[in-house]
Image 1 (cartoon, one colour):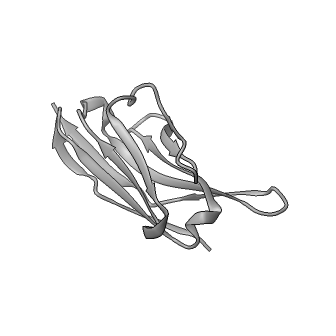
Image 2 (image 1 turned 90 degrees about the vertical axis):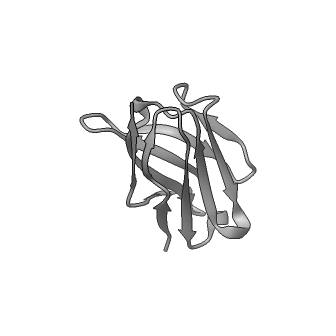
Length: 120
């Protein structure tokens, strides 16, 4: 069983920074990749960034150069450092992970979400 718990959301002024953290309860080594998604009101959930177990990263074009995803397997955590925040970054941010079993079946896990609000 895997549980993801996010923290670190809040209110920040445009141009400011926030750091989101996601603690994985379970075996983080079996979760690959892990990532962050976000969903703004009235919009679909979208990918923000992903990171594999060997550290390979992928970012949405809208956050490249501003956001950094990192993973600490020893601490069972995945973090998202968000700099130069813009009002359009405001959303509920979700930690996610995918586990693939020996048959190739994928299980997707989601955290409960953390609100990020950016004031202009």
